[in-house]
Structure formats: C-alpha cells, structure tokens
Image (cartoon, rainbow over all chains, first blue to last red):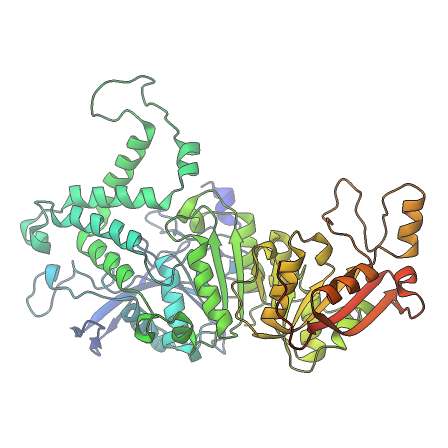
Length: 379
Length: 207
C-alpha cells in the first residue's frame, strides 16, 4: 500500500490493548474459564453518550487487528482496513469501532497456547471448547468494561456474522443493528465435512502430540498447512481460481514430477506455509468446532424464526453469488426467519466473482450498501 | 441521513389513501424506496420493498427503508401467506413475464393487492400507434428496443382479466397528469390504480 492511499481514509498507527477478566466465565460446554484476557483494538472516538460503538467480530483466521497498522510493523494492515476508517463505509469519524480477538484465539487473547494457572504450563489439550455463544458473552463483558450499554452495530462476515446474529439473540437490548455478511444460520453437512478433514489433518500430524505439542517444542505444521490449503479452496470460487491461476504452469512446461508445477499448487503451498508459521493448531481446531456447533435454531426444534424472535435489532444481510461455502440460499434462510418475525431487515445479494472471500474485498456495490446502511444509523 | 421528501406525488397519494394507518405493506419492484418511505411517513406503515436491481437496493437502503433483493419472477416464497395487509405492485406488472403467477402470489401473501399500471388504451398512446410508431410517453418512457415492458395492456384488458381470474376489484382510480379521470377512463386515463382481493369463495388463480 502506498503512502498516498494510506493517508486518505486510513486510521493510521494503532496499538492493541489487553483487558483482563477475573470473574469466572462458564462456557456452554460446562467448563469454566477462571480468568482470561481479551486483546482488542479501537478506532475512532467513543462519544459522550456512548451511542456510537461498533463491534467487529472476526472469522476463522483473523484477529482484533481490523484496521490500521502497527508502528513497528507497518506492513501488518488490519484485515478489514478497506471497510473501516475515516470516510470509509464504517466511518471512524462517526463511529467508535472495536475489534477483539476471541477467547481461545492465538493473537493475544487467552487461548490454548496461554499458560494454564492451574498447571503453570500451556493449556494445550486442556483448553476447553468454546462456542459462538461463549465468545459473545465474553465480548459482552468487554463492552461492560468499556462502558458500552448498546452497540450502534455489531458487524461480521462468515463466522463473524454468526457472532453478530448471536448478539441479536443473546442481548437484544444491547445491539441496535446487526450486519450479517456471507453467513449461514448453521453449517451444512458439507461444511462440517470440510472442517473435519482439516481437523484430521492436524490431529494425525505426528507433531500434534494429542494437543500438547508445546511441551515438545514442536508445531503440527504439516497438518496446519493442509488444513489451510483445504480451507483456502473453499474460500475461492472456481471462476476466481480459473481467472487467477487457470492451468498456468510455473516453468511453462510439465516436469513429470511432484514438485510444484501448476500455479495453483504454488499458491496453496505458499498460503499453507505462511499460515502454519503464525497460527496455533489448537485454536484452529477449536474455531472449526465453534463453527460446527453454531445452530441457534437447535434449541427451538430447528425453527430459526423462533430463535430470532427475541431480536430487536435492525438487520443488514449480505451474500455473494459466487460464495459456495455459504451461498446466498443460506443467507436467505436468515432473511426468511427475520421476515417471519416482522423484524427490520434489508438484504443485498452481491454479484461478485470472488467466492466466500468476497466479503473481504473492496467491491463498490458491496461497500456502497454498507455505507448507505451505516449512514442511516444515528449516533 | 435520508433526504427529505419533496411534496406528495399524486400517484403516491392515490395509493396512500387506500392504506390503513399502521398497515403492513410489501412493495414489489420498490425502486428507490420513496413510496415505502412515503407510506411510512404518512400512514405509519411498516414493511419491506422488493427489488432486483443493485442500484435500487442501494437507493432503498439509503432511503432508510427495508429492502429485499430478489427476483419477483421467482415468486414470493420468502414471504408467508397472509403476512401483509397490502401488497403493492406499482407500475411493474407490465414488465413481468409470469403475470398470473405473480397476481396469485400477491393475494396469497397480502390480504389485498394494490396494482397500478400505465394504460395502453390512453388516447395519446393510441394516437402514436395510429401514426405508425410505438408509443413513448411519461408513463412509457422507453423506446421499442430498450423497453422492459413486455406485457402492455389496457384498463379494459385488466378488468376482463380480473373477471376471468376471480379477482374482485374493490377500488379503482384513473389519473391523467395527476388529475382523476371519470369519463371514458380507458381512453382518457394514462395511469390506472386498482385495489383487489380474491372474489369471495374463489379458488386461487390457476396459472
């Protein structure tokens, strides 16, 4: 990113903060987190009436670093920087935006690699399974500590959108608007199947050591790499892969071997290698489980409308036509359930070629709808 | 922030007079959402617009009304039966492929339907045809080669259709230049407004 594009609409240098909680958190599994830390970042200014706060929830591999850059690492730009900043669709001149690393994460919040106070060693396999409901409860406690009674909006894409949806159900009085982007109301068998292959890749890696690999000073890198390669295939569309890589050959010819030949192989290996150097395998396992478990309709006999009945927020639901991981039909299930409740909802189906990853792209139609919606939220 | 409404258009006022205070409305082919906003501001109506185009969805969101991006030709399966007091189809019927199916859906989802359309029997339209040209007017602003209108029809056509499909006409208003037309409306009216429901005891339209 050039200096010129950075200055306009760029939140600039940001500094993450930590908030520690010592009131035990009972999780959906029944396990209890005695104490924990959440790492978060904020952009913009909380107004005097504290009515302009926006919570951004992250998806599988992202973090609290939503926008801006770090002074000591200027190349590390926030993962949703194209959406959030001064004058951007989520305008930090108007809104006070919070990004938070979820419990169980590996970017600063308490997670499997953190020290378990009971043993003095990393939690590892003992770190409990966390759910979307647990994350939302933890985020609610962070909101309490920041003095935010009611969010102007909770925003998320993919797994982040599930958190936005859960916020509207768990704490209807505390969220005025929910932006639910590239979401599904629950995973399909195929979605769970992909997650299970990813988990098996990690758990069958000899370096996994039942989840306690920290003690052995190794990382199940091969498994993590495979999991990421598999995931990446599901984030892109067939068309975008064809457009980006086609059948292009690295060296312009077949080598009749198993080293990288096609560009797509090179890309996937690169993504897998990169990911395996910074992401914690135990976190990956737990986040995929949180995805699998998310199903707000389950407690209502599969009736999603009944699950969403308590919500009072206004909703903006957005899907992308080429997303085959959570296709538009899954978003329409959410819209239908909201309509059945006569809740306020707008739904945009963006004709974008990028597959599931489209929610991270800078598409003028997509960003235009968010800007228009956010522009009508009073602060 | 939403822009203020600039006066009340006669076609909006005609529709609004039929909409009860606090009614639930569904506006099919809602455009930029100004009719819904008008009904919200003047009748305390709540509800949703439906539109297929990106531009209209964006404009409706900007207007602060609920809008669902969807193709009307695919039906209204996202909406439960009887979930609206009124389903409005404002100057859209003539552009729809599945006329019968859509009218059936309107009266499945809504208690009543409000349908408006440009009258192809209007004398200025007829005059252009007599002169050997496809009509172009304020209500029909397109050229023959770029028009979305595929099912142009007259007031008489529509009323014949309603009789043949067990649709009961509860109200009718015909306007030209915003003024009501009472004499020979199929000749002197440019825009027709109907409030409809199912004729008592009638079966739904069989497409």
